[in-house]
Structure formats: structure tokens, C-alpha cells
Length: 502
Image (cartoon, rainbow, N blue to C red; front, side):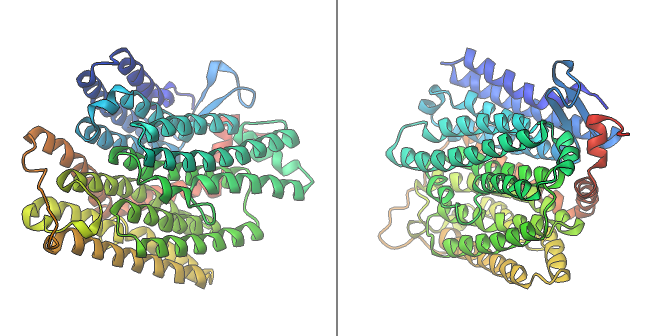
């Protein structure tokens, strides 16, 4: 079904960014526009998902060029749900940024670039053209590079160089794969590619081409062994920026992997085994990194790597149950990881540091805030019945059913390391007394009430959503069940884009 609502989430953030460019020096105006634009983005995303649920997969042909010759935008259950979750995370970050980002960075264009980034994420989720997906990836990379370097501190620039170098490498592999794919099929439309790739007799060439995509998306997702750019860069920008990066940027790589390897390159036995090996190694390396880090944001960065391995393993098994676990965990991870970096920002606002050895006593001073944060930590660990618990059931069940015992062991390791690391963080930062000799100045109490609300409200918003998902897991399971059906059987996607095939 053709529907113009598809581009709503893209245009909302585009127009929001343009309005903020007009109000370049008026930072208060920019904050208001950002909040309104982000809220409208959530409403439009809810409307889009509602239309997809009611009417099935929606399409839009750009400039009225019929597929497969023109650029097509497609909203199915997976993409429209991710657009909604991205909009919710974007709203939380926007509210936090209104007080968590200093005025100097706002004058450098923080808010317009932030909305260009969210626009790029929504565009990547909604495109049905493989080259257009690359273009949206570049919008994301450019916007994120600017956000990472705002302020120009040495540490930021060092992290940005590592981030940019590896992402340019990923884009090179991605673009090379697109070129080869176009050369052997003559098409860039993903639905059309799913049909034409079956007619290519040279399976070796198809395998090589899929490897380019696997490497490109693997780097963007921070998969072993090219993950080190993430913990080397995500701790350097302001917390609002790190929250956007930690919650969303690696997940768009997971989405791209789900889309390409369900539509175009159906994983063969070698690819599945390779993905399972990468998943195990990614979990192990992320877990080992998290065990030794005493900086809160560095710890969270390694937990991102660890949990990416959970989703890679689900893609590697590529069964309906495994994909249900992957998709459920993807939704959970976006919300929780965004919230974790916002929490790190609040801790920094309170005490001026994120080094655990200099922290302590926060629970004694702020018990209500600490309990709110504890709910988010419990969800990250996967304490039942919160959102992090349910997707692991699907992953454990299917890995045992398929006898992937190494992955089962890695899941257990990753879960216990997450529990240990978070318990240690809670003990060091919230529970214990302030270490002797440390001047623990309370910077939160003197803040104006409005600023306190804008720092805590986004955490409460995302925490409420994760609690809602956990307590209403049956609804989410029904949703991911339908999504996994669409990924395993792509005929409805192909028919929506190309029409009924003879």
C-alpha cells in the first residue's frame, strides 16, 4: 500500500534542524524547537506504526518512479517499530540535552546536527534501496563525527579519529559490496535484489559479495575483532551525545544486517557458523573489557560490545525463535543503553567525575533517584520480569535446541559479567561511603529545580518504557513474532514493493 506518511519521521527532524539553523545564536529557542520537534516525531512514529499494523507493509516511490527503477521507502513492522523506539530515545536525549549540553556547544550547532543524525537513522530504517541505505549511513557518520568533535578537546579529537577511521573503512566495504552487487544483478532495490540474486549462477561471487556486507556492517555494529573503536571513542563526547551513540548507532548496523541477510543473502551454513563464532568472541571480549573498567562510561561501552554479541548470535542461528530473541533484545537494548549513558551524565553532573574510585554515597543523598536508576540497572542485567529478561529466553532456548553450546556458555558468561559489573558499579557509586580524602562536592543540590527535572525526567521516561515492555512482554512477543515471520518469509515485503510477481 502506497502511503506518504512513511517520510513523516524523516521530514519532522529535517524541518526541526532547519528551523534551528535559522535560530543559530538563540540557544533557548533551539532547545524549545528541539523538544517540540522530538515530541512531534514520536507522534508521527506512533501514527506510522499504527498504519502498518492496520494496513500491512507501506511503500512510497520517490518522485513517482516505479520500483525497481526509483528509490523506494518501505515501512514494515521492523522498520516502523525501530523508528518509534528511535524517536522515543531521541526525545529523551533532546530533553536531557537542553540542560546537559553547555551553551558553547549549542552555539557550535549541537541541536541541528543532533536532529540531522536522528533523521539519518529514520531514513536508514525506512529505505528500501541498498544504495540509499549507504547514503543514510553517510548522513549518520557525518553528523555523529561533528557531534563527537564539538568542543574540540584533545580527548574528543583522539576518539573521533578512531571512530571516523573505522567507520570510513566500514563504508568502503559496504560501498564495494554494493558495486559488485549492482554489477551482477543490475539492481539496487532490495526487494528486486532478493529475486535477481537467485538467478546468479556464480555462488562463489555471491559469497564474496556477502562478505563485504558482513565486514561493513560488522564494523559498524562493533563486532569482534574490529570493535575497539567503540570503547576508545564513546567515553569522550558529552553524555547526551554518548547516549545517542550508545543506544542507536551500533543498532543501525544490526538492523542493516537483519535486512540484508534476510532479503538478499540468505545465510548458508558457513555464514551461520561464522556469525556464531563472531558472536561468541564478541561476547567474550566485551565481557573481559567490562570486568577491568572502573570508568562508568568505559564500562558501559564494553557492555555494548558484549550485548551486540547476543544479537549477532541470534542472526547466526537464523531461525524464527532466534530472530524473535534478537529483535526483542534490539528493542530493549536501544532504550536501556541510551538510558545508561544518560545516567552516567547525571552522575557526572552530581559529582563532576565518572571514575568509580572517586564516587560513593549517592544513595544516601538521593535515594529516590538511586532507586529509579536501580530499575534501569536491573533491566540491563535481565532481572525478571524486566525487558532484558525475556529475549534471553528465546536465545537460550534456540541455541540449546540447535546445540550451539559455545554460544550458550557465552550467553551465560555475558549475563554473569553484566551482573557482576553492574553490582560492582552500584556498590562503588551508590552504596558505599565516599572514599576518605576525596572531596565529594554535591553539584546537584544547588541546581535550579527546572534543570534537575530535565536531567531526571528523560531517565524516568525511558525507564517507564522498559518497565512497560517487561510487564507487557506478551504484547511485544506477539509483535516480534510477526516481525520474525516477515524476515523468514519475505514474500509480503517483495509483493508490497514490486507488486504481485507472475
